[in-house]
Length: 367
Ligand SMILES: *Cc1c(COP(=O)(O)O)cnc(C)c1O
Image (cartoon, rainbow, N blue to C red):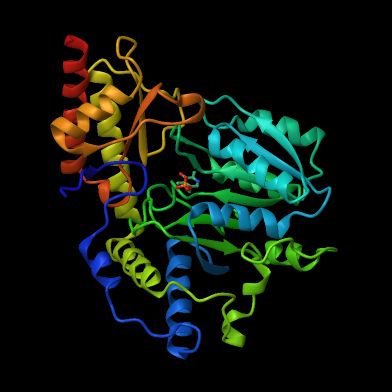
């Protein structure tokens, strides 16, 4: 089977050295003490990647597990939680909050723009009694990037713990976890990190640990309980058997980024993103967003004379062998998304993709 050339906003292309690392022989990660060292060193490499000195954990499960684990571990019955919503993942956090007994108070902001921080500030002046807040860094279905550097310090002024879904931004956009006072920064293996899907990782600040430790009631989950990880290294005990091959791959993927340097990787993302947006506009295509463009994904409106996104996706795959994607929820059939994150974020790959997209749209419009 010839695989399509993957240019989606996750999963992304995986470099050969990451794929090969996953083929290494396995030890028993529960009882081999060397594995605890390897796991801890990998968490510390991720800490460098996230620019944090706080604890980092790698959990066996896709990005969504991290999101749910943060909410499960922090939420108690009746807790008020502020959910910042200018996109599908933003809105989705409310479900995790209510599922664990919390009261989700949704702060809505226009979906075609980054979160309005002045409006947020005005809102917080009137109501700031929240245990924690959820924020999405890049809301991938629309590609909107939110200014964490303003939002997180603002929330912390009111002692609100910040839970940030940066699954689709970290690595492509700056994420200064400690400097911006992010309490829990959530990531996944299959976006800018460019390892296969299967792992989520997160940083946990002292304030976040304290909020979990000071609960009146136990955490209503085992797999989503972050507190059971607190002493894994001291006790040489994992809550479940670690997916060793996935972690071997993740380690090499993180090392690839650190070896290139965070700044160089981010510059590469800025370059391909600027190029993609410019090419789309020059070709007469429209971008979905008005501002807040993430450098990890470009979201282009389906032209009015084409029926939904599927004909374009089909043409891209059948004529050019390139897999891009549409979107979902309120954006279903309205947009095409090019994922230029991680290993996808090279000019040669992006140029080929936008050339093909422009040609594909042109040929469908001639019909
Ligand atoms: C990809 C992604 C996740 C992980 O979820 P999946 O849809 O299962 O891949 C979480 N948050 C954001 C913003 C993402 O882009």
